[in-house]
Structure formats: C-alpha cells, structure tokens
Length: 382
Image (cartoon, rainbow, N blue to C red; front, side, top):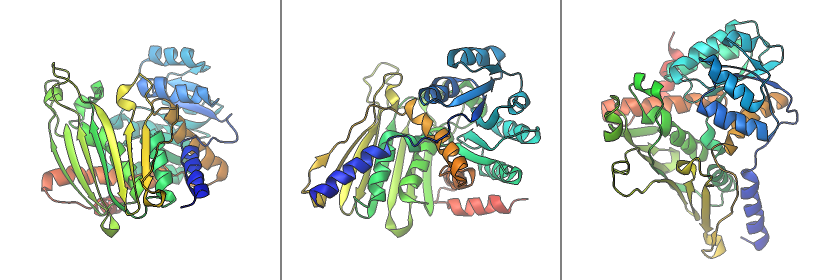
C-alpha cells in the first residue's frame, strides 16, 4: 500500500467517526420518555447539533417538565397521543422500557398523526415476534421505523467498520468483544426476568452484524450475576456467545457484568476491549463507555502487512455517551430526506432481535441455534 493510500485510509477512518447530518434540521421531534437515555443522551446530542425537539411526555409529568426546561422544549404533554398530535411533530423519539415500547408505538400509530418516522429504542420490544409486529404496523401506516442501535455509532466501532469496508484488514478471520463492566441496572429490569443478553449483549451482537454481516448460528451460555442476584432473580447475568458467519468467519462476545468483587472490596479491572483479525491486518480497540460520566474516547489501533507492521492510532475527542447518540436520529432524518431505508431500519433490525432470541434458545437447548430460522418463524406467525 503506497503512502498516499495509507493517508487516504486514515482520512477515511477519521471521517467515518463524524456524524452525517440532515440538510434540514427543523423537523419537529416528539419525545416519549424523559429518563436518562432521553434527558442525558438523546437531547444532549440533539442540542449540540441543532435538531428540534418540540414536545415531550413521560410517565411522570414533573420528569418531562424538568427535561423540557433543561433542553428548552416548548411543549410538555400529558399523553403519547398529545405529543403525536402536536402540529409540528413529524418524527417520534421513543425511549421507554422494552415492555412498554410496543404499546407506545401502537398508540402513536392509532392516533391521528403526521408522523413520517419513529426512532425506537433497542431492544425493539420484548422479543423478535413483537418486533415483527411493530415493523409491519409501521410499514402499513407508511411510517419509517428506525432502531436506536447506538453502539454502531460509537467512534471506534464506526472506525473499524471503515477499515473493513476498505478491506484494509483483508478477509476477516476472527472478531471478539470482551466486556467487563458493572452496568447500572434500571428498576424496570426486575420485572423482565432477564438482564444482559437483551440489554447489553444486543449491542455487541448488533456490532458484529455491522462489521461482519449476518451470522448463521450462535451458541450461548449464561449464568446469573452474583451481585445482581442479591437484588432480583434473573437468568442471564454473565453471558458468553460464539457466532459462526459464512466463510468460516468466527466471533465471540464475553459479557461479564460481575467482573470479580470490585464493588465488594477487591481491585477492579473494568473495561470493554474488541479485536478484529483479518488475513492482511489486525485492529484492536477499547470502548470508553464504562468511564461515564468521565469523557473517555473509545480507541482504535490497526496494523496491516502492507505497511511493514506499523501501528496506526487515529484519535478523536468525541465519546459514545452522549456524542454518538446524534447518529441514529440523524440517520433516520437523512433517510427521510433521501427517501431511502435507514441503515438501522426496523426491518433490518429484525435479525438482531432474532439473534438475541437465538441466544436465549441456545441457553435452553445447549446447542447452536439459527437466528434466520427464528426470524422465519416470527414472519410466518399469524
């Protein structure tokens, strides 16, 4: 690879971490939910890039009012229907727990509306079958549905995708994501009976799809997290998954929310590391999110055989939380402008939902399961 090609590659990598914004930023956004993800991530990113939230509601009006005052949102509404009926709302941003999301989207679509698009949180409902229903409902109404798979917009994840899209690493051979972190579990998770696979691992499973395409099979093994088990019963605290992709490409995720007794008095070793090995290069990185609220950018280092083994480490100042949260909404708005399907569309997200369901099924069957088979089942269901 010539010097000019190497420089072009590094410029491509750095450009990939910059958000692609819509030409028009005046589209009215209606916000459903005012918890941490909405108030501290979505609205912070929207304000920085001059997007236009115009109405908000939440289960508790005072919470919605506080978010509205903080981010200068003009209308605080009582109901989903009132937000949807606001004369300036064209896009809905839904940030509610997974088991509440389907009801919110159904209500929004039943109400008289001018909606052009909906950005829904991941996971898209509680399982793949519910996700299929929501995708079909939005398609029937002519509303573009996108899913906030926001790890795709983490800067190092985006940069690695740029390397793979240029085939700078050659043919992928093996990819790994290793998370050792202690998430802040939300109170609503206690009623779900599940923790890591559908809330944390879904990020990593979707990232591997973004990097490598759609896996054929997944094998998953889980056990409860000793710390979380003291608060509520759950099945999937610590989760290990092996994914098999076409062409002998393999990947794994290790999602360890215990990390040893770091909260109980031992030293801690907390972080998220990823690695992609190809036939012609290697990329390794870290995810800065576990340090939140400290602003710690994610990182990337890569080396290729065409550059005599030199390491390259492009850098940026932006971080996943909250900077990367502009990505999903901006992608939805750009798709609406360009009259195309968003890269994070609800239909494209169905295989991520099926992959999560395949992980749960694998933990029960104790064998590898096919996400394609699960998605087919859900699409055929009445």
